[in-house]
Image (cartoon, rainbow, N blue to C red; front, side, top):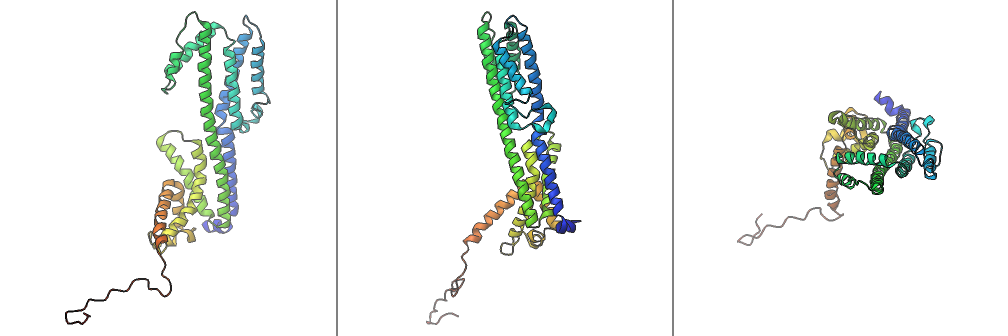
Length: 341
């Protein structure tokens, strides 16, 4: 099987990379964005209920309330703000950039609703927000609870403080998620670029089997980490780990070949015979799996190779006609004038 993959297994590498590309696409549009999209839909429905309550109040349907309702309609329809957030397109039609802009528009609509709600509702929201901020584990948010101290008889100041604190929290939430989305987009771009490099190395250098085993090791590393730590891992790590493991496998074999070269002779003959030039052997495949599994192993070996390059580069090659070593000094003459042999 291994020999077949080495000789005729180009289709296998294409198939694995194509399937992983589909997984990356579904991850970026569904697994990452779907939870925030469901929360967005729930908040839109909550804003519609609040808008209906404001419309039934003494003030009736004002122009500001109509503008808020129009914003909510554009978020749920094929509007200009988030033109691909369509419920009938499944979760794979949720780009992260459009989702971030949709949340900003929703927060603006919620801020506008605070300006239109009744004083009794504002007082209730102030108490609820103050209790939530007081129980936050983040110590930077607790001082905001002191800003929402009760102000009896001053409904305008109470409303203004609630709007200011809510907008501050919404801005912090938007910035945090946009930074997270940006990191995820960088990880997805690196994964796509890495897949191209995997195909190039596998088809040109005939290291398909070591690439596949390195990718398997890169997949096992975060899997075992999640199972042992029982905590969620970053999406960027989960997406990049198989691609990085696949690329680290042939690179590690090349580093092993360099350090096992007779000029350096740091790793011995076994690694010399089971590295870059014999990537289909079992020991070489096991080394590729280890390099894909452990990124620290690759970095340590790369640092060791870098440390060995300096002494090798500093060695001056002997020129023609010049002895490699200086001649030994002649013995001093003895007491009779003869030289001691």
